[in-house]
Length: 222
Image (cartoon, rainbow, N blue to C red; front, side, top):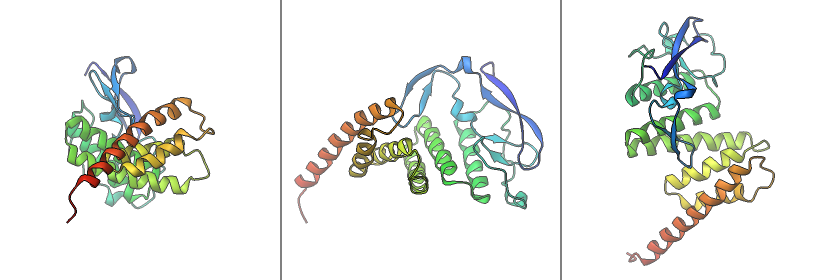
């Protein structure tokens, strides 16, 4: 508990004021970061505390949520745990599913749902549950793709990168190469670090695609 601080927030739905746990910045000691931006920490992981859960009405949300629509109160999932305490991976998992349900009820933007499913995939990764991680990544990909279509005229570099990296993690190497190449060769992207990382992962995806193709060619035809 010494790694946590309690932030005062207001529930956007019932207006109840409560304190939700967050990891103190000075206690956030990162060990490594995966190519899809999942950060592994030495102690408490901030990923577990991304969702705030109102202890009065059960509404579960993040800072990215828009103002909820009227009349959704009855569709909010009932409280099933105490979320105003130190969280482990299991409690974090439940908090994300609650937020996803609330986001669906109020028809949140695709970008918000993409982020929730992506964070949920990270929780499963930290738990070592590869099958559920894959399922969550597939959902994240679907919503990132919708976001990409909706914002095609805007700054889509990070979205394209995530479409490529998530495709690679799901074993869709041809698709991964396509998106990562677009980022690697796009000189309009303002973040040079993203472009550089895209080039590195693009090379990795190309090698993986070549290996997959070679294995298919070697496999006996039925």
